[in-house]
Image (cartoon, rainbow, N blue to C red; front, side, top):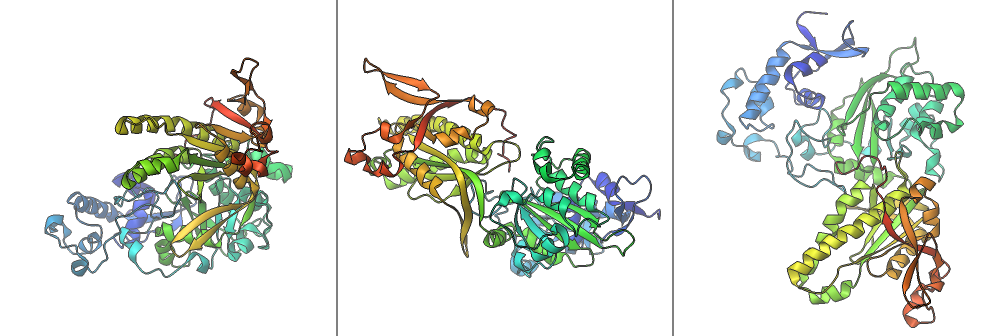
Length: 550
C-alpha cells in the first residue's frame, strides 16, 4: 500500500469523527471519495476498505476549527476548497441568508415525522450528532433540495421489516434478487420473517457474501433478539441452516446505535464478475428499512431521499400491505370528561388533556405501543408482537403505569384548582388477531385495525369506573404462566354482610356484573357474554430494555 494513504479506520481514529460524519464530508466534497481496495494484512476483518490521502486528517482538523468558530456547515465546503480557509471570518461576520449563500437553510425540525408517540420533536441538531436522522453522506441542507427519487421509484432491492423482523414491504427487485420470493404475499405476516426468508432464498444461496448478508441483519436484530428466540425462526430449517444461523448470530457484533448502518457486500457467485452493493439500514419507529445500492450506481439521489425520514416513512406506510397480525388493544377514557370540560375554561381543559397525553407518552414508548385513532379525548393504542418481550404483558404493564401516572396528574390539578374532582382514566384491554393497515392523506398517516378487538376494548373502557383496568379472560390467558403470576386480578363480590371482597384469579360475564335491564346499561348488551376480570396490580417483570430513547 502506498505510504501516502491511510485507511478509513485510521482516519476515524486520528480525527475522532464518526463514520456518519466521514460519509457526510465525502458527500459535501470536503473529502475525496476513498479508493476502495482489498484490505491489506493487519487492516482488520474487512475484505475491502477505503483509503484516503494523509492530507485528509488536516482537512478534518480545518473543518473542526471552522465549526468551533460557529461557521455554518452550509458554508464550510466552499471555505475548505479555497486556497486558505484559515483566515475565514467568524460566523458573526458571515451572511448566511439564502440570498447570500445561495443555499436554502436547513429546517429547524431535525426529528422524525409522522404521528407516532415516539416521534422526535424539533430542535436543530449538530451535523456530527444526527442521532440517525440523516444517513451517512447526507448534509443538513440536503433535506430542502427537490427530491429526485421516491421509495416507489427505487429500482434496486429495498424492503422494510418491523420490530419483530417480519417483512412488511418489499419491492420487486428485493423479491427477485434478495428474498427469493414471487411477490405474492399472504395475509399472515408471521410467515415472512426476514432471517427465515434469507436462509431459504434460492437467489441468495449462491452469493459469495450470503452469510455476510445474514450476519448484517443479525447484528441489527441481536440487541432485541435472544439466542433462544432463534429456535422459533429455525423451526422449518434443516439442521445445517440452523447451525449456520446460530454460528452467525454468535459471531455478529451487536449494533447499539440507531444511526444508519452501512456495509459493502458482493452478491455475485464465486468465480463470477463481482457485483458489489452498498447496503444501508435506516431505523424508524415502524421498523428498519434496507436498501441494496449497486456500487456502480450514483448514491446521491438515494442519500438525499433517506435524509428525508418523514418522506421515506410516509412512502413506506403508503405502500405497505395490510396484514393479519396478533395484537393487544388498549383503550383509555377520562372519566367525567364532559363534566370537567364544562367546569374548566377551554384553554385549561386543553392544557389538562395535553398534560395527560404528555405524561403517558413515555409509558407508551417504553412498551412499544402504536397510536390509533380514538374519537374524543380518549386514547387508543395497539401492542404488536416483539422479539424480546410479551406484547400482551406490555399492554397490561402499560395500563398499570398509566393508572399510577394518572394519580400524580390528579394530585397536581387538585392542588392547582382546589377542586374535589379526582381525575380517573378508565382502561379496557382486549387481544385478538386482526387486520392492521393505515390510511393516508398527503400530509397525514393514521394507523387502524379492523376487527372486534377494538370495539370490545372500547366497551370495556366504557364499562370501567373509578380509574379501573378491565381485561378479557382471553387476554389474561395469552400470558405465559410466569407472566400471569406477576398480575393481581379478580372480581369484587358482595359478601353476606354487604361488604365488598375480592375473589382473586376469577372472571365474570358482563351480564353477571350489571343489570342489563337497566336502560343505563343497554349499551353493553353486545358484550353481555364477554368474560372479563379487573386488573388490580402488576409486579415489575423482566421486560426488555426500555424503548424511551427510540
